[in-house]
Length: 396
Image (cartoon, rainbow, N blue to C red):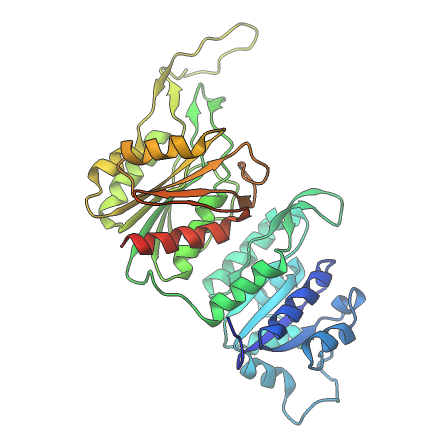
């Protein structure tokens, strides 16, 4: 999409991911955007301002008291000019400043003066990302309308493996474009999303569960909210970030809990997307006290409630989307599931494939409807979420 006539303010804070922002600035410039870059002093330790000046074609600003500018008060001028402001990478320190209203350098002062949409692409250590302080600051910013690009997982600069990597430039760019040209095709619709796994107690200490992280459900919920939907999330055990203030969130533990919550909210929903992975079996009897170790244990299991089938029977004209996570022959099983559950769409994925398993930020899926099968390549879960919502619109 052509971005000619749009001004994108890119704020760069001090982190090793700064080098990726060069690609983002270059790509936005190639699409016709007027890209303005502002850096913190720490960011200049990683990449020089001259690099961004060369890529953007505009002067990079670092110092609030820089005299080499036009007559306007520059932080106010840039804030007024910007159609969108993206901070990449956004450190924990800078997020904290924004949450607390601290404006002690050019970039923080400019962002405070912005009336345009603000987008943060965090980058930090896994423990910092999970810290109570960062999560509290993130919640404050989200309540003020600030948007976040989900972090990725992998090897971090500190040597740890985990969440906290800044999203890739193309992912950030897509978020920028979405803010410049917002899609509101789900405005007036209520989307009910299930996410995560459930836990079936064996005794007060142990339980049966699965590897579901809730990342796919979180991506769908956020994409639906971005497109104007009222979003209800029924959330089991998750590691994904589902703290978005735009959601109406209902936390559950067992499959029975999830079944009850979904059936209670079903009358309000226009679309039901069952991205959760509830347990299919539970112990027929759960012990009241901890079962002592040291002896063999035989568990008698019984089937849990079939949430998808129940929704399929009760949905009427509502749209039902379900997932089929398999370890082989995913498409065949999914087609059978489409009929048995009376679903309108099945998103099938083979979790044994690299990049398509539980807990990953990517997926490889096949979308199956009653008259079409569409195989998709490896992509981020957010990208898949938007495609799913696009296909839902086609069903209508």
